[in-house]
Image (cartoon, rainbow, N blue to C red):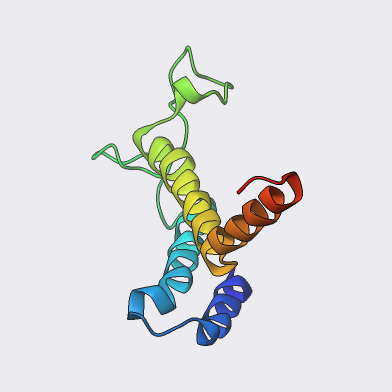
Length: 127
């Protein structure tokens, strides 16, 4: 993920200087994507090394799944804790969404699709 972010930063020099966000937007998206995607992996490491206890009085322990009779030994979505939902579902999916958007933006996909459409229409004889 660090290499992907570095590549986005390196390729930002090719983009025009319309605005800072236009120039560095893909890099920002991929940098945040890296943090979101790595969040659940970091939670696992913190829990396994006992830095973040699995159970806390506040209810925000590092445990991913509830420890109830109906959820014991079951790793299903309905048994996720608040932390499980936040890290496993929310952060991971948001990270992959940002990664996709940043990568497509960096590849300038909209102009490539416009060129593809124009060539398709030219081949089909459509004005």
